[in-house]
Image (tube, rainbow, N blue to C red; front, side, top):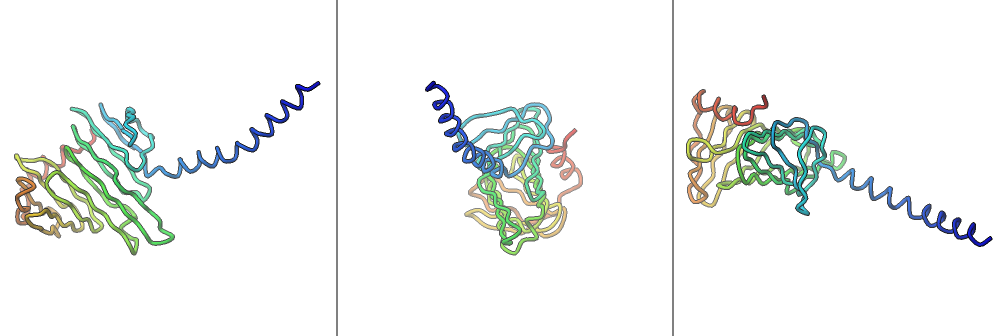
Length: 215
């Protein structure tokens, strides 16, 4: 006789709790900043908590995630504004900050490329009135103004190659701006200023692009 009221009370409690739980799930879903749209061989997505999962096509990517590839790995991530980031082998990039709010005209993409080569192509965030797009590397910081470029180790130095738009490459020793497609700069170390902008030979450009080409 008393069992039924107890069951009803439990059901009532569950009904009260369910909406907040659903809201939490929805909030977590909106925290996604992008997804993996291409992957080759060994690649992982590591969360801020340290948990690591194998990268598969369609896997969500969140702020503070670290994207990693293995010895023969490649991975491409598309962000919510259609910005595309491609990693070559033995690469690591952390998504430090990402905001895309076209209603308010605000956008921010801040990445930390700590290892390997990458290719970055800005999406719709470049159209916003207030935007910050920056990528830090082991030897310099790259300020982006609506563009596509490559960065990574090449010829025993760290290189940055402009494919479209304009970027500023700077560290404590100096700063240069790449403003014409095909221009590149080489940086020997964090203590050395970026080299003067120069058009890279076609052979060097081909070698750079090959490091991030999905086969």
